[in-house]
Image (cartoon, rainbow, N blue to C red; front, side):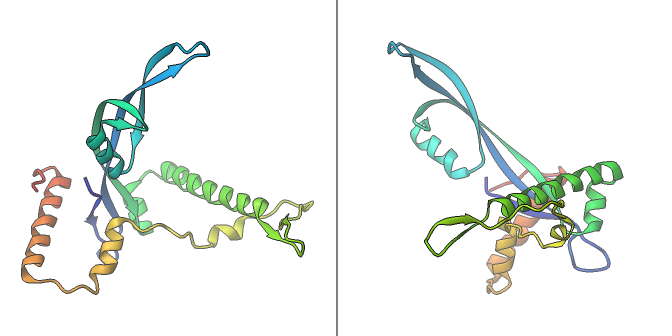
Length: 198
């Protein structure tokens, strides 16, 4: 199933969406792995993996193989995932302050860890063509506070890519009607009042 974004809430004072949601599908694949010991004896074991890309699932459907191993079963599940676009959206999605702070800290911890890695692992080429470290150790702790304020580049979702391109696209009346019907189906699906039809 392709990723689809719905818009369950909007900030009433503006046109900015407080949060958005996307339907994402995951596939659990069970496969048989054959192992050989030093004497050449074969043993088999059942392994499982989680797929995030539809093309990997389609390859399994076509070949019956996963990473060269015989597939025993594939199960799929779609999930409605949420992303806050504003502080109001954050508060609505996670109204409990303690949990909201915990999630904020998790995100900022990852951001600071990434900055630490960038600082300590960055190299440059010297005049002899050798790679040297850019960072020089200091006696005082490196303060990461300002790095928290640097804008994080977020990968655009499939919907955001579509929305960006749709702004310059011309639609026929039939295409507009198609999207109206599709959005109505998605809204019914996300609210639990209807099933998605192709």
